[in-house]
Amino acid sequence: MIKLVYIIKRLPGLTPEAFYDRWLEGHAPLVAEVADDINAVRYVQSHTMDTPVNQQLADSRGMPPAYDGITEVWWNSLEDLVDGMSTPEGKLAMGRLLEDERDFIDFEKSYLFITREHVIFDKT
Image (cartoon, rainbow, N blue to C red; front, top):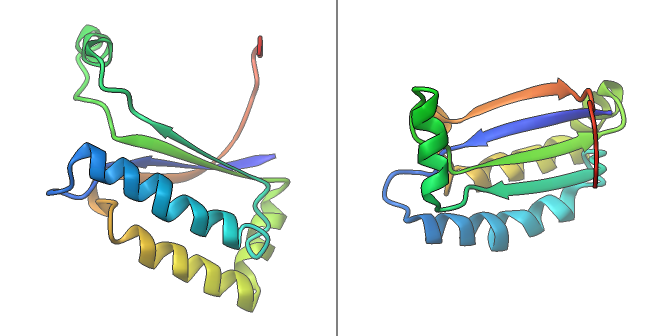
């Protein structure tokens, strides 16, 4: 499997509460709606927790404050991802996702990349 990882910063002017609500209640249903069009098989949002532990961990490593969250989207293969974005339905779906993201994601401060997982251990 391959995974798209999207490390997200919210748009300036959005409170964390408004951002998380928009992302979870507004964007997530759209992703679920278009998942088959883009051949996606799994979608997870990880919302950054408001806890002093985040800053302690960052400080111990000399890092800046945390991002607002991470989105992960899985496909069975790179070919499935490319195929899903190449069809007319997939292109339309990707356009809808991009347009929706403009309302709450600061693209200039966020990152997006494709990865291949290497599970070292899983005790779940």
